[in-house]
Length: 260
Image 1 (tube, rainbow, N blue to C red):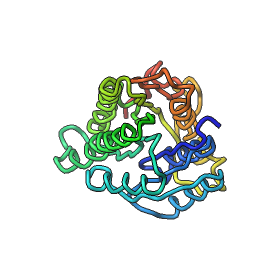
Image 2 (cartoon, rainbow, N blue to C red; image 1 turned 30 degrees about the vertical axis):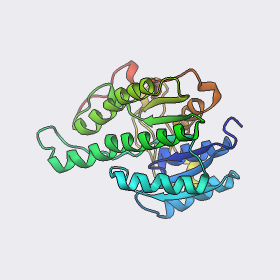
Image 3 (tube, rainbow, N blue to C red; image 1 turned 90 degrees about the vertical axis):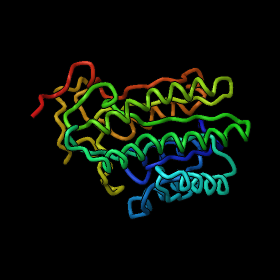
Image 4 (cartoon, rainbow, N blue to C red; image 1 turned 180 degrees about the horizontal axis):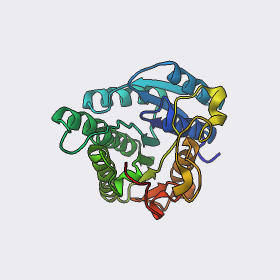
């Protein structure tokens, strides 16, 4: 296992892509911290799935847009696990709003979760990694929306684009300290909330997604993103730093579906 004994905190991880990442890192040997804004049945299922991989798991309720809650979350994680080797920023707060109709409140809420929160978590995690003098990995989940505009996606897409630039600055400012910072830009991923016994349906039955304009001819699934996270966090990704890897089945190579 490439991550034996590592300690990983994944934000926004009670379900969907975050769940897939948490379980995959546990399978590779990491102990896991799950963060989200509510602890529901989906969260309990995720924690049980991590335990099933033979790893310890801790729960961390926090709104990452607030520095005090980020500090409390990391303090709790450190008390539980003793160190932090991996941070995966995965919180996603979407919106469908035209530029002319977007309110100040919507702007503040989404920028807070999708950009400011990533900064707060990354800064605090990096400080702990430096304090422990053991290096680490920070991976932020961006989106194909960082590379082109879709209708009514201004705030979300802007945040995802900004993550690419923030990641490059983080990598440069942490030069020589063995902390690699990278991004992943998923395409369309089937991240429906499904009970564990229905996971085999992901990407297929019940997911309405036009795959005829995606070269891979299928929707993505959380495991597609988790596999790249594992690579970046393992020794195999040691020389990848300040980059964004697009995982979209080729979606951006040939355009997008017609706008309604």
